[in-house]
Each structure stands twice: as C-alpha cells, then as structure tokens.
Amino acid sequence: MAQSTPTHVIDVESEQISCQADKMYDLLKNQLTQLPVIFPEIYKNAQVLEGDGKSLGSVRRWTYVIHHTSDEILEVDEKLTEVDDEKRAPTLSVVGGDLLKTHKRFDVRVVVNQKGTGSVVKWQTIFEKVDENDPHPDPYLEIFDNIHKKFEQHFHK
Image (cartoon, rainbow, N blue to C red; front, side, top):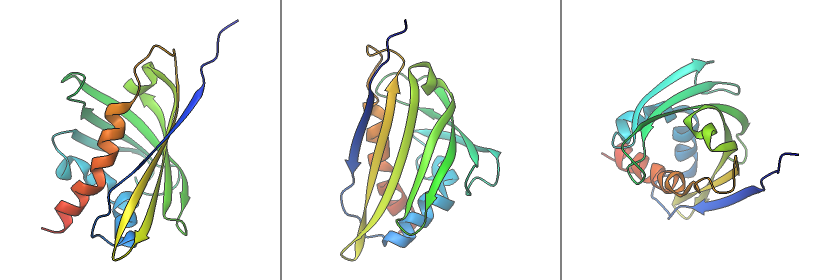
C-alpha cells in the first residue's frame, strides 16, 4: 500500500506597502501575466492556455528560473480555481509542469488586506509532496513574498 504524505500549509505575510488593497488585488487578479516584465529575473514568460487569463477557470503557463536551486528553466501550469472579490482572495492551483514532479498538490491562496493607507498580502501555500524527502518549497515562498514589492516598484514609476 502506498504511503500518503501529509498536507502542509504555510502562510507568508508581506510587509506593508503603499499600494491600496483594491489596486494590489486588481494587479494580482487581472495583471499577473505582466510578471515577466515586472520581475524578469525570475519570470521569463507567461502564456494564457485557457480562458482569458483573468477569470475563473483560466489556465496560465509560467516559464521561470529559481536561482537558489539552479539556473534551470522551469515551467508550471496554474489554474485560477477560486475568486472571492469581496475578500480580495484569488486561489491558484498547479495543474501541470515541473512542480508536479515533487508535489502532488500545490495551491496558493492570496489575500490582500487594507492596512492604513497601504496593504499587506498574505500568501497561503497548501502543498503535498510526492515524497517527504522532496525539497521544501522555500524558494517559491520567497518569490511570493517579493511579487507584491515588484508590483509596487513597477506601478509607482
């Protein structure tokens, strides 16, 4: 009988940035495919495979590099599986690509909250490894923690 691996949940909350929560949510929900322009040191390409890339059910393919582990070009297909506009919370699920070599499940729920005159972004990563000896997704958590900063820098130019 195959041994199951536990489901892990990790929350990463950003530092407060000056961008209003509604604006940051719009960027994360509707303009995420701009990441190769905004964050080119990591994201090399974004391609919409299904839908419009913004609405529920849309599937996007990301080509990216994680410099901490190697300079290998990786790909991941993610699907927008849930959208809660009231809570400013989209959920993305990995449905294909390199990440599924080491993870049975990899979902990311993003919640944007107003804080003072700016906002904070909470990235909740829910994942299950193929094997418990597979690497922990720390490099991805670091990337998530930097995305909102890159958006802020780009849109305040």
